[in-house]
Length: 132
Image (cartoon, rainbow, N blue to C red; front, top):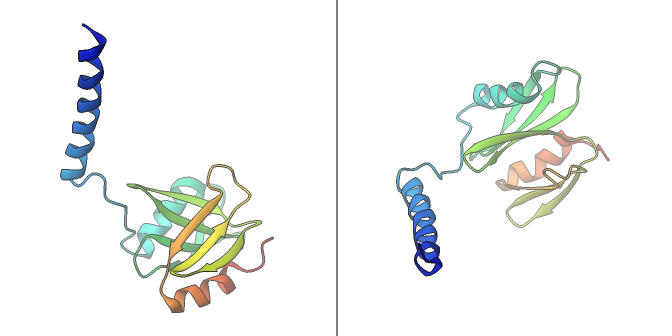
């Protein structure tokens, strides 16, 4: 097959799959329905060694602060259609216009931008504590 036909077929095929996934609702950002869902997301990654003890869920359900059984702060946050969880050791918290920016010493998730309401944005840095 000539490249002039194969190239557009591949591009149209990939675009078609992306559009189909979006129309089926499979591209929506995950939402943590409640504290139990946030706890389950944390425990999925760290539950065997350090289970969640306390959970503070964001109003939009896209993030939750975790206090672990060992007393370490952590966060569960939406990463596309799935969640990710990270410890907040060494985190730097910076207020931004619509929430907080958390800078982590972790190359897999160096920055987390949280969309929080004004009350959460004021309260969460105290809950995270001084971990630098």
